[in-house]
Length: 97
Image (cartoon, rainbow, N blue to C red; front, side, top):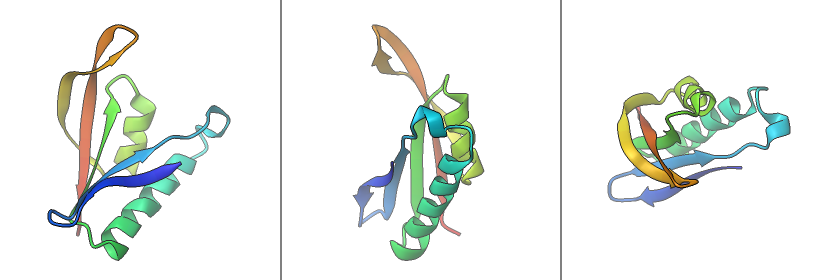
């Protein structure tokens, strides 16, 4: 599953999100889908910016986003609460052009 959500027609920005089932991880499917979705976002939807977040401990997801051309912008400290623990979230983005 992959999507562009929170689309802003005024700012021409969207958030990239995806999930891939455990049996299909590690085969490059997420990277291929993320790259394709970025192309749709920039070429078809004429977005200026595509952004995404991932848990800081999720190195595989961060790597997928980097391979899709998104660049590290910062860390949102203790942004997500999972299992009673606050976790950091890394924020990445890619600009058109």
